[in-house]
Image 1: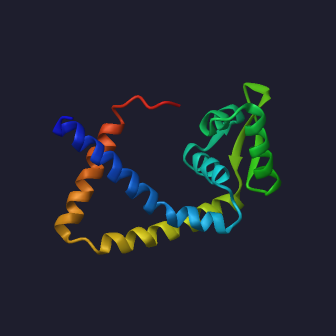
Image 2: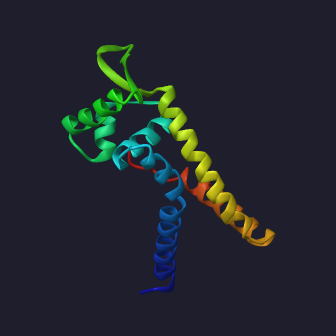
Length: 149
């Protein structure tokens, strides 16, 4: 195994560990509110995308349309999302967040900010600058990559 391949594997491993541990705050907060992981993932997707079709939710969750519809229906019944008509096709529906879900997400993000604030406070100014630069490099690079929908 080449050293560059080994370094790449280390980066993947370390990034996965960081993501798993850093997301505990928001995921734990939202789980305490009675949400399942698929529901949390769907709400976070909608938070970043604004709205989505049920078929997009199915692709995101890697499930069929029926399972995606059931997931969305549970979120509708909990008052977290609403279905809205697509202007160009009245038969089609998109899903959009409601204020209740926005409040849950904001609460989870605040927990996340507190957790990450504690982590970042432990870093020296030099290490903090290195982390900042690394994230800027990653953000630049991700814009150049074709990500699957």
